[in-house]
Structures are given as C-alpha cells and as structure tokens.
Length: 368
Image (cartoon, rainbow, N blue to C red; front, side):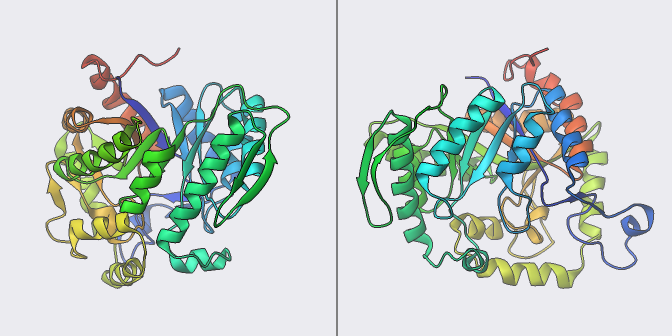
C-alpha cells in the first residue's frame, strides 16, 4: 500500500517559532512572530496543500482553535480535491447529530470528510467544556458514541442503550453516499480497545521506529481479536532542507528562541495531562534541551513547549525520505505532517521530499 500524506491546518495560529520568542532572540527582531488564523491565511495553507498533492489537512479541535467543522467547510469551497480531517470530540455533541452533520458535509463537499476522533487529555480544558469524566470513562463513552455512529450510517433505525448514551430508532433521512473514514489516536489500553473495535486508521504520535513498531503490534493484536484489521498512521513535525546542515540550523534556531522558564512551565502543565501519549512524548526528552535527537533525524524539540505530538523529522530531503521509508516499512500508511510556518514548510517538503518518495514507489503521483 502506498503512503498517504496529510498536512496540518494551523487554526490556532501560526508562526516561525515554537513559542513566543524570549526577549532578545534574533527571530523576534527580524519578523512578526505570530500569524493570526484568519480565513485568508488558512485558505493559503489549504490551497497550497491542495496544489502540492497532500491528501488532506488535519483540522484540530480545542478552545484555542477556530471551530474545525466551520473552518473546514468554508475552506472546502476554496479547494478542489483536498480532504479535511476534522477533529471530533465525543461527549460534546450527540452521535446522531454528528451522523447528520457528516452526511451533509459529504454531500456539500463532494465526499471530502475524514474524522479524527479525539477524547481529550487535558483535564483543565475538558472541564471548561463541562466534561468531568476521567480518562478511561471518556474512552468508554467514545466506544458507545462510535457504535451508534456506525449503526446510524449502516442504515438504521438504530437502537442503543448504554452507560453514556441511549437512542431509539436513530436514523438519517439521507445517509452519506461515502462513509467518512475514522481515525483515532491514543497509546493507552483504553484507546487501543476503542480503535480495535471501531476505526479505520490507528494513529500514534511520532516516536522512534522500534517504539512505534511495538505499539502497532499491540493494536494489531487487539484488532485481530475483534476479527478486524486496521491501517496505521503517525504524526510528525518536519524540517526538511537541501542539506542536513541547513535543517539542523533551523532546529537550533527554534531551540534558541525558547525561554527556559517557558519550557519549565510547559513541562509542569504536561505533567497534569491524563494522556498516555503525552507521557510518552515527555519521555523522549525528559524536559531537557540536551540530546534531543532520539533517533537519526528524529528530534524531540517541539515537545519541550508544545502539547501533543512532540517530535520532528529533521534533515536533508534525502534523509527525511529515508526515515519516512523506514516508518512505512513498519506499517505507517498515513503520515500527518506540520511545520513552522505551515505555508512555507509545506513547499519545502513537497518540492524536496515528495519527488524522492515517488521515485521509491512509496507515493502515488499527485492528481493533476
């Protein structure tokens, strides 16, 4: 199976730095540090991803992001074939309503919706949304949510009575012609069980190939117990340049712009997370800015201050392509990438790495 590449839509804002640069940092004196996530800029990123051959853009959800459904629907009208991987949070909306929203989205967009199921890991954010369930209970709720969603899409009417949801004769007057593929990430046993039962693609945040291979093995075994098979994907940032020296110089620049106090505050915040994936990201660097290359061309610098995926692929175009081929060999079929800023890095990667992946037979020719 060839590799499917996805890009990221920075609906929380964008910039040249990992965080607000510390006073006196060079980046702060030479350029504006942040770009607002207005529709004009997000349209630039989406159109670039569309033209460069990415399959979709991951559209995140959270209090600091613009709403994923509204933003992606607006951008679908400004792109031609690009799909939108919309982050979906079970528990914040009814599964029957989501089934209806997705069906409408598919008809209006020409079947360009993917759904990334996110249960949430930050307890502070969950409570701001009014969600007080703990980690495992959120996955139990997601399990029921997805069973109902699949049941409705299967034609209905669908009856269900569980701990978190109860629906009677749930159905759609106009089901989607194409069911949106479901993605789900999570390293915990609870997340793995839900993925094994319901989704099409299991996602893991970027780690070393041996770590990721072991995680995929666990999830594959759980899916086989359910009589199912899954595809697998991962999420990395990327810094790819004509030479390795140029790429690592950019990584060093990002690191030099970080205030130690900012790193310490971020690490304290991450320690409160209920996410097993977040704990695995923290283990890559241990809160230290030393020895951040955890595997050839795998750099954990993002995780010093950024929640979620904390590793980046860093190197020359040839090195990045080689590392991607290594991940593909252990089972990665979907690769979701991002960079700082997202517009410029999309071009660096698409023009430098994608031709090499096509030459290796890992990537199908882009439409058009």
